[in-house]
Image (cartoon, rainbow, N blue to C red; front, top):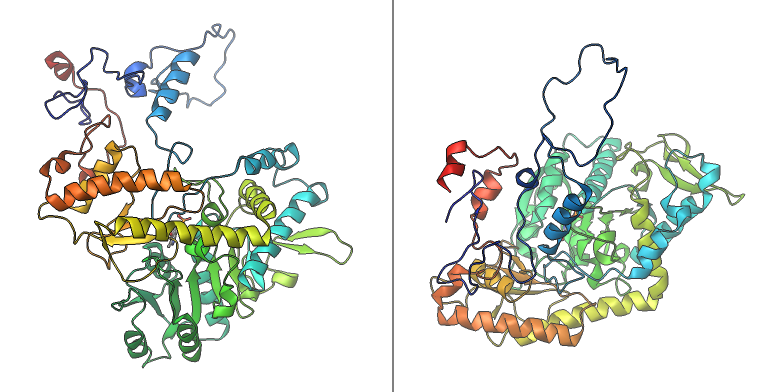
Length: 524
Ligand SMILES: *Cc1c(COP(=O)(O)O)cnc(C)c1O
């Protein structure tokens, strides 16, 4: 096989393990081969004809670019084909089930999209006078009131732009509250369970706290003895960051006791709300003693998700933390008008400051409220119940072959360990073989507390037919893994590229294209 300078195959890959014959063009079926944009275009060409500018004078004070900008020039059809061909190589929620655990990859109803495109929402600008965007402010206020009602907490910061950003918001509010108590310099320790999402410890550290890990018990929940031990010294406790249901897909049954212990120690309870989808409409985090929790609108409330954005992570806050919420805040005045408080003044005098340039992800707000209003309170509860039902259906079917990580029913996601696999076969091999079966792999090797973890979250929007199709494929591959079928280690065989060196790709990403050396081209 020949390689380009980036280590990418430059010829169609074929071989004895390959189920495809080689093709001259490198295309397969009606899927076109596609090269890098730098390989199909050149900076000596341009896709548009512009007349030579006449009478041009240099108005840049002598700093005009002296070398070509090194961007490939393509015509419109070339550019369109390039990106459409690349898009056909993507897997998407609109193509099939996306079993990624903890990510809640559910269908985004098209109604939400339609409403988000209404000109009154889509074409406004955050710097317009507030009097001209009263409807948008009302929408933010209504969404805020749904979020407060569903969580049973009195305040919400709308501006955080993702779950991790919401964590930052909640922990900054906790920091500010400790500061107001004059205890910030002593209360530095944040407890984080071993199964936590990586963003939890990262956020705590970013806010200047020290992370103290609590182990899980044999039931996959916080080990209460270990927690009590950690709280024997209590005057340095800032709080706890806990996910519920946790990332093992299990409800933390001791959550009320945990909240009480943390509060008695003088700390605050941050709940990672990424898994709210499992309990929305059934449980109000405020009743569980939570002080701050982000809500991933792009998970629980179905707004588009993936590819890095856009997300939205409004963060609900308890009475104790509400005064420290970030600005801006939408306030409804007695005359019915809405007003944005932009600075730490008036009702926001104790705010810790501002997290974003403007007011948050307006487009996501419209979609999330449309989702809530079209479901209603009973529909949201039904969605949570169906999500849990679907995950348990998957758990029940797959445990015929695979090893559940913990006994009993799960919440919204089913977690398996690699114990059922034969020696020499690992979680990665099963995951890669699922690609050949047409499925995006599940979350793997997370949470860290389970060996070779496979975490599957189907969400409520999958039909029984689709769940069965998926389970059939997983069971087929799992049986091969249990039998020690070594060919799994070659998977995926049917994908455009086969097994890649993901460690190298993550550790040493090559983000810059450089032209192949002339002799490398000659060698091909
Ligand atoms: C998704 C997720 C996060 C982070 O949310 P982002 O919106 O991706 O920043 C945090 N914790 C858990 C448990 C998650 O699943």
